[in-house]
Image (cartoon, rainbow, N blue to C red):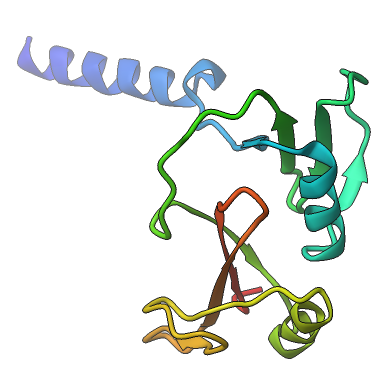
Length: 148
């Protein structure tokens, strides 16, 4: 009887694990609340150089961007309410060429810093990955690293 219960438990476990209803979820998009859609759209198009993609609302309050790996960034303008923002909560994007990215920040007049907050300094993680941090027009922290 004990062996039957063990085998039955294993069988049920395998059925549950192979059932697509219980499959791991995947990220499809990140939504970011913004105070000025045009200002933020210019930032995400020009600074981060994301490609704008079609969005279904067509109400002037949404802009969607392809950020790679079948993931989209949705920026949504809404009446602004104060929110708590700090560097620990950040969006992170990886680039192939950190030097070229930093050069574009200079052209866009965007200041960056390392994790401790030293201006115009690149942070190097223990595994050798380079990181920089800066904020978007609403103060959201963005990390850029070269772990592409």
